[in-house]
Image (cartoon, rainbow, N blue to C red; front, side, top):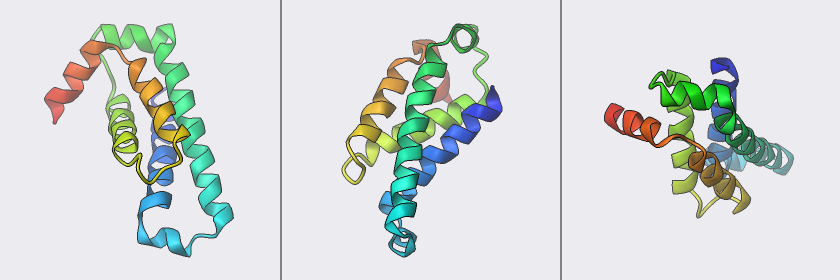
Length: 112
């Protein structure tokens, strides 16, 4: 599960990069579109994962893996960059963040 969460986090990071970084200018419109679609899909997939009993149970027990914290970082970054992203990507990121147990937010905030 950690590997999947980490891979989804990378897709979100790529979508944010495609919308914000200078090298995005060197990307074709197909590459940028693909990165955005993958970012949107990754946010939606994380939302479903965070609602699953297995992940929710881990979060309640305070055993949130580092991959989950990295995903939370990427989701928050996605929301912070909402002014340059297609609106459906930050909306999906917010939905994923809403699915996270409150105790996990506390744990994540203490790592900052």
